[in-house]
Length: 573
Image 1 (spheres, rainbow, N blue to C red):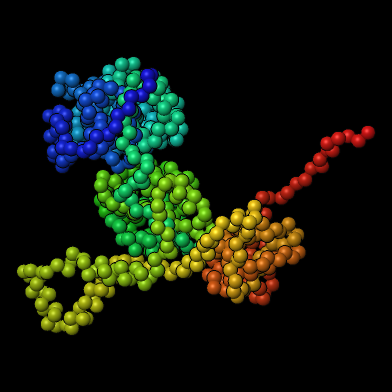
Image 2 (image 1 turned 60 degrees about the vertical axis):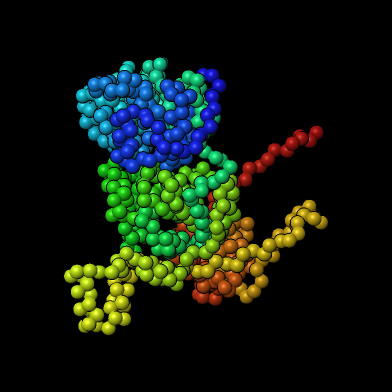
């Protein structure tokens, strides 16, 4: 393939005429002007060419490649009779594929659009393919299955679309993608859409595209302007309580809570449901029917919170999603931006909140800085903050609009029979009854002192910052010299299980069967509460002077250490 041509995106303007059928569909859906990516693919230099497009999630990519393919699919202005598909769109996940099918179905109202995704009845899909269609949308695995079974005939294909190509490669679908592309006609158009263009995408484009036009609508010097980033510092054992208070503070019509593992997803979903939140779970272990039901609940408003893993949330498009919460920190800046990109879509404002345990603040700062976004740091909202926010929302609630007719007569009868303050109090109780109560969270520790001079001015090594001065409380931990205890790994363990920072820990002394350490009195009560019921795999921690230390088996973080005798470098003569 020749070197990719470059096209700068153009300013937005009223929709140019594309095709009478598509123009009517756009008007019906209320499209007044194209987005940047839609404007770019409709430029004269893009017509009939392969395209390699970078665009943010939520920028209207599905409609964009639908518009770009129109001149190729309907050169005579009419959709041909259904038969072997003339267009194929490949998406990384079932949810995204079904969303693409729904978008193309309203855009191409006279076309048959079939879906081929995992978790659905493959025999029903095969019948739809044999009966004839115009466009097929599917996931790489299921499309590959249909090809191998002889159900999918790609001989008449005119356009292939790879949507979210970077995610498909991340999920390990490169072999399936190449198997599918090799079965398509050589003269087809290939439209490749991806949020990022890493080396693997460039290699794929060079192999399967011809003189592709490069379109980039992402200004990488600026973060996503419609997303506000917040970082909430909490004690390690108060993550769940902080999540509850964050959801209560924002009261967003739609929210996604991201977790790193399925186990955390199950635990947080159960915790939110028990507290009265309308929450659903999205996890890879769910069946397709369960996932579809959960997504329908989020889209219809029956559920307002979705608790999910990164894989389960790939490609989700929830129009009323205003809040994203990272209950567990993303591992890299790409994951942070991908999660956060679920909100702030199509011109809506959104908020992305990271819950940061004190012990992981440095890691969170590294991820945020690498993602080139600016986050506002604070503690979690407490119960008083949330109650005040509830009062503000109540005063502007639409239910307080002036009544009329019979409703006004009933209201006046209530005022005659009861004290107005008592009626207002009853309304307040009813209003609060439907809201989950806020949780108690501790106040964040004071920030570390800021140095005004470079610590390396007079010494090549920076001096270690002093620990917090003040009164300390002594605790014991059930590992000692016999367990090869070492402050190098005891200190991080104490901070992790107790939700404190290194500055909150004083001296550590190692004895034969246990060790003693000091915790600042200001955080000692919260530390004692956090370490009161640790899992069996953790060592026992108690306050010094409160009875004998229980015996518990514990394996050091790096396991038992073995030693081998080293041979001398030089054999003596």
